[in-house]
Image 1: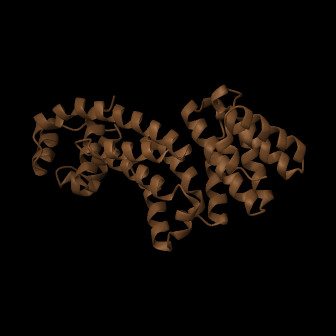
Image 2: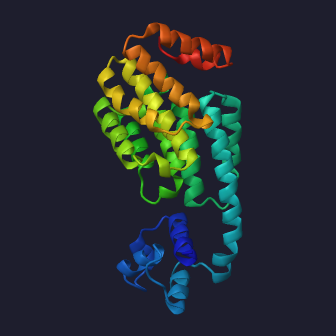
Image 3: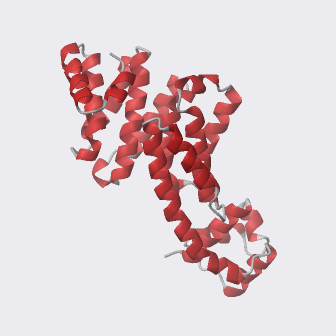
Length: 276
């Protein structure tokens, strides 16, 4: 376990420093970078000097670990609830979770990113809100999504992209979706949560493409949905994939049957959002 490296990285992010600034001339930037990645072991004297340079006491450095670990579990739990609330447009729960995220201390880089994601989804989950964003606002959101040092937030990142996919042009969105599909092509090795987030992203993209009559762009994400395992948690996304495929291939009766089944199963609110 790369405990020291991960802790130094988290501290650097919390302080808002680059690796060059964090190394502070004590060790080379190249060596420090490898420490964060667990490729190099840092000497005790160098480690203590780096902490001293940034006015961080060793006791605080190590004592914060349990708090951060507990906070991380809390944030992940809250974000999972938040994503579900966003999908069902439950504004009351969304606002409540954002307030809870704001109260968590210390506000590490992971917590800041999670809070930022939650606020972005809240502000842009409505299509009219997305349309009101100007170019600079869209560019800021794109930068946030792919900022460095957020790989650990993979599930939330995909969920965020799924919610704000329409801030991109079709060319950008198509390139992004196809890149994501290539990256996650080996579906048998994917975490279940990642697969669920990917299915939502694909459906939102397909729905957008269908509404704009760009049917040719739907085939790749539809085929990706078909390749996902037939697990019950993925059923809704796979059913919707089949629904759009029926619409595109002009199988209107089969598409209508899917809508009827979903309504009878209690998904009337979702069906109202689906194109016919």
